[in-house]
Image (cartoon, rainbow, N blue to C red; front, side):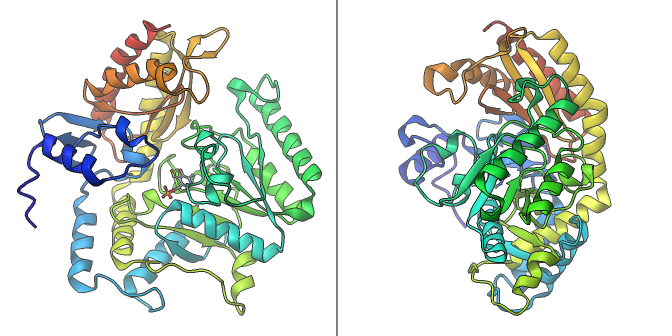
Length: 449
Ligand code: PLP
């Protein structure tokens, strides 16, 4: 393939701006960085500037860029069988499903493949509605579940606001967030207890018999990296069981090693009825997502047809990437590495940074998944930028993010937070390199308050 006319960053950017329509953006307001290549924990532009990828892109390159085993598996599969419709039985699809079923919690033994996370959420919700015959779905404020018509309405953060009217029946509740407790709790145990009491009340007022499902990210991802207090997920499971509500864990962002366990829910030993996944399942090398289905829902469709499918469900190239990713993760101890890096390096070092920089209000996270919540004032906890800030109001965050990127570190800036999500196989030296840049960037932040 010759792209000889696209050899400089300027040419690539101009070509992009001519015809590519970008997500979540005013098209005239953006100037995307032209990326020339990537390897491991780094990617680089056409001018030779390297970036340490503390975003894992959109939190999906869990085994880093260009992992040789995954690249080879996709190449080998392409040479053998590029594509085949979902109705056929194929070795690589069966093997991907077996490996996912073996890793997922509880009795989630059947895998419905999609092309990504939002489709997985749409199908999980459809399965729950059919299985229960009920119309409504509970979801958290401060959640992200995808961008198609149903999942965007389950989403509980500002990206939902501009969307079409889509699915009806989404009902939102508050999950625990001790730093800004919606329940005025003073400690984790109280936050947990009050959040569960609140959820029980929402269920009672909505009418338990109208609620098909409750969908929750076991560790909330793009809406802020919120680790639930011990007992919360078990309490949610108990409420769902009591009222016949299907429990869906959305592990699209936090599954496959991100939090230092194969699935975030493993940390608390709670299993859902359905689990949605994508991203880390094959590190995003070829689009893949899916729903892992337990017996309660699976049995509904044993004799009755499931009304849903996708042309590329279980695409062989994506499944080959998934088999290679999961195998490499197991062989190379990638999940254990994420757990260790979180406990021994990122956790303590970020806490030390927070001590030194008054702009940091709270540090939270686990494994290879952390957020710094930035504030104007530590006492009042006034956010550095207001909720859903845009334009000039968001400028301080833009300055801190630019202080990182201009020094070769690529974090995620979201709201008044910096999210730090390096690949799960990141090396300690790379983490230290990133933390040194972050230290300088937070000094810039201190100067803004
Ligand atoms: N669910 C969660 C928890 C996510 O984080 C995301 C994406 O970030 C989605 C669903 C949507 O996934 P996709 O963008 O692959 O459709």
